[in-house]
Image 1 (cartoon, rainbow, N blue to C red):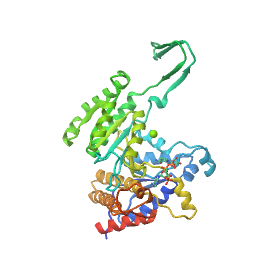
Image 2: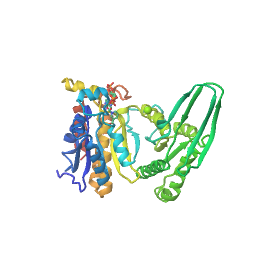
Image 3: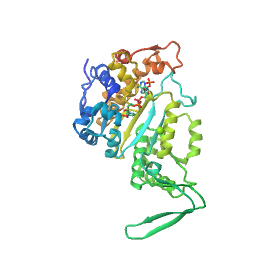
Image 4: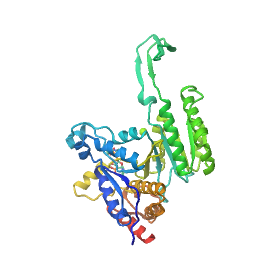
Length: 402
Ligand code: NAP
Ligand code: MG
């Protein structure tokens, strides 16, 4: 069989623990036999990040800027326990945070739907993708406890010395006080990433905030989205036949519950934090969530939403059998290969991505799945397999379809 050729490299970002084990299995069983894989490899496994003082993370991010598309394995964000475990020189920042800062991107999370793993909300027939504005608001707040009687003021001193001062509240007794901010530039990048992504997946985009109450702050978010839509994306949206829709956050929740799915839902930072957890558990399993970082300039980085599955890795190291779900990591690869194919006009690569996704879902629908899915499936008599057996079963289904 002739292997599929690739014209432009894909940025391959390896990672840690159990997902690093799955990464190699996926390449060996599902990619290398079928594709003449052209990747530029960056090892973000913690030992090599430490060896390079984390320079490798910066290099990988710049490579995504150069080639446009990357695929990333889950990585450890070190804490004190990890510093000891890996004898690290420093407590490195979250690789995802570093990559996001360099690409100025927004993370989109979408569930993988498969028969037999049913969403809690039975109306949801298609995935709901959530985009969280991961900058500012309450996550960058300044807050303190008000000890007692006194006046709280909001003061802004401009560079030219002009002062804008308003009274927030005159306290008669103790309470709490908080200040927060956001930046036009960050909101604009977020809006552009959302419009780009919605166009890419050809789904309607919803954005919601509370501008009836927060007229200036949330009002600014609403206005920026509307201006960017009108001036930069309206024509393209109309051509593809999708819409941009703004509503109040409470109305959005009511509508989401009644929708059939198939929507990209843009959320402010706090809303996105809360509702992404609601959606991932309502759709069934964290192991079935994909994640893609989209920059306003149109660079893409695909990964699984879950972490490195540390507990399974220690079982694996102890020589025990694991049954770790590789579906989201397989879909990270298919997402990246499909995007690479789209950008390069490489239809063979795009078709391969479609076939590998279908083979993965068909395998689960035939009743063969990892233990985490066996626990929640509605299919009768599911067969629990180990990590490698699942990937080999997908390969057999894939080979039969080629
Ligand atoms: P995790 O790796 O997502 O795993 C938490 C638990 O969820 C697992 O112990 C397992 O439950 C279940 N699970 C998650 N993914 C699964 C899969 N593919 N198949 C089967 N079960 C799965 O989260 P964590 O243990 O909190 O974090 C481990 C490391 O990952 C941390 O060092 C963290 O920094 C890192 N992390 C990285 C990313 C990223 O790179 N994007 C994201 C999150 C966390 P059972 O043990 O009950 O089977
Ligand atoms: Mg959360």
